[in-house]
Every structure is written in C-alpha cells, then in structure tokens.
Length: 104
Image 1 (tube, rainbow, N blue to C red):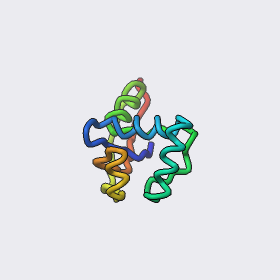
Image 2 (cartoon, one colour; image 1 turned 60 degrees about the horizontal axis):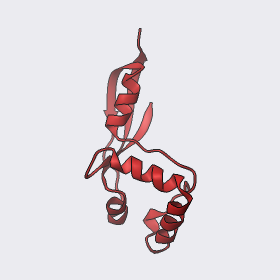
Image 3 (cartoon, rainbow, N blue to C red; image 1 turned 90 degrees about the vertical axis):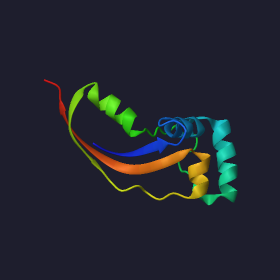
Image 4 (cartoon, rainbow, N blue to C red; image 1 turned 90 degrees about the horizontal axis):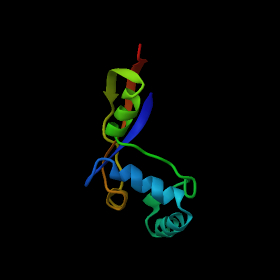
C-alpha cells in the first residue's frame, strides 16, 4: 500500500479532516476556490468531491484491523507553501509504503 500521510500541527488527524470537509462541502469548496485566486497553492481539483487524506496513525489503525504490518518505508517530508501549511494545519506530509499481510 502506498499512501501520502498528512500530519497536523495541532492534532495529527486534523489536516485530513479539514481537507475532507472543505472538499466535500459545496459552500466551503466555493470559499476555498475564491481564496485560491489569491493564494494559488490552495488550488485543488477535488473541490466538491470529498477527498480524504489521513495521518500515519489513521492508516496504521485501518490496516491493523485486517492485516499484520510487516514493514513501513517512509519517504522524505514533502515541501508545501507556508500558506497551505497554515491554512490546512500541516506539520508534515510524506509518502509512505506499508507492507502488510492478511491476518491468519
């Protein structure tokens, strides 16, 4: 499994929840789209869709419910603009590969 993990500054899972609620709500999507005119780093092609981003803790919890984790490979933190980091409460974003096996 290959995922991008979004860790929040105030709370690890807050960033994913913010992104989901902004992209799934038409009213919030319109506000974010308007803000993106002034801060292009906030542009997204998912407005109105409801995209879910998760922290590493959330991915681990989901996987461990049905599988045994054999290994985790974490990439380097990705760079994001300060505006995106502040607006979405991002402390860290990185790509993670999880090797898992179905429970016996």
